[in-house]
Length: 237
Image 1 (cartoon, rainbow, N blue to C red):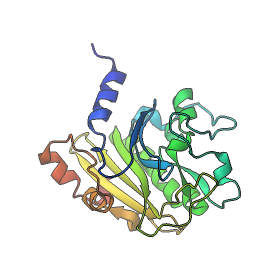
Image 2 (image 1 turned 45 degrees about the horizontal axis):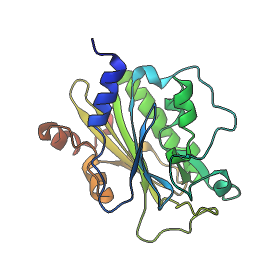
Image 3 (image 1 turned 90 degrees about the vertical axis):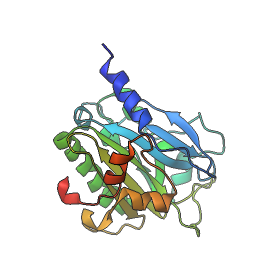
Image 4 (image 1 turned 120 degrees about the horizontal axis):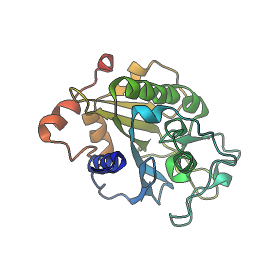
């Protein structure tokens, strides 16, 4: 019998985004997530993970001196000094709250290849509320396949820190559930600390693919992909 973790990792791998075009991309596999790192922005292009009902809670605590540089990516790379006195929070893409099920998973969630500069009010506010909703939905519906990351417009803000970490203009998140009748939903949150209801940020996965020039779930059969990526009904969650 195949071990459930092997099945989970295989399924997640098949549902990773397609390779990006014209963008630096270094794929890094962690225990809880996969990240596509961009050496120019010093941030992830995207981070993908499977959130199971079992992974929505746990006893693992946040480690001391939590945030740390990822030595698997080339220098210059993000480090603590870049965020010091910058006014920007160190925003998780795969949340620490999704990694409380394992010590290694929790530790790796604080690697800077899983972090972007994020407005403090958004980090602890609307973005956090969407993260909490994902955990509620995983408990209710079962496994969720999630991809999120930064969105940059053509005219970027000045980077932060001596290693010049690019500040996102917004963040995207797409969510796929294959249990029962497959469904999907997406969100785009501006990186400016605005405070609105989740409904305001809802987008279809198709729309976010158009903005990001990405293909999020290329391994899905077209008959399923075309339906779930056009949906934007938050009431079904």
